[in-house]
Length: 196
Image 1 (spheres, rainbow, N blue to C red):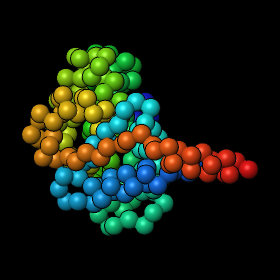
Image 2 (image 1 turned 120 degrees about the vertical axis):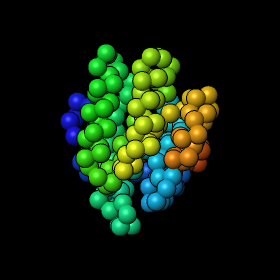
Image 3 (image 1 turned 45 degrees about the vertical axis):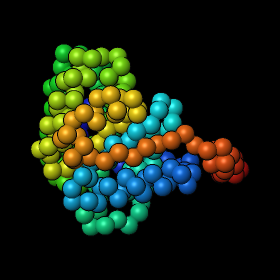
């Protein structure tokens, strides 16, 4: 898959070295459980800006790469496409760029997960590109044999996405809440220990 359009997070999994707190590990296990299903196996990650959404996707790719997995998702490759940046970079060619990504993911068979990141930023900054993206995403949800997902905040999910029956029928949400004070402290201590 061309890096100009998306990142292969699985190929970068070995670069992740910082520890992950137990709360985030639990979310990763929820996402993996969704991926192993025969139906409703498209994860939607809901979280506010700054909650570590993109980092969680990297840890998801690392976990999928390093952990023994059920046969149904063994060898799955995780891709991330930043739709806000795609819209900025490609302008009028945004939809063709999305279609190239979709075709490439379809050719990966069922052992690929494509996560569209920064969907809420696209919704807030570029309404035209958002509508175009949503049409492509819903079509991909309905026709693709591989798994696709979305990263957005709660506001976009409740205002827009929840209204689409197809979206609700084919995907499941996982909410990324801000870390608790105890989890933040434990994570900081683990990072300090790791550096020494």
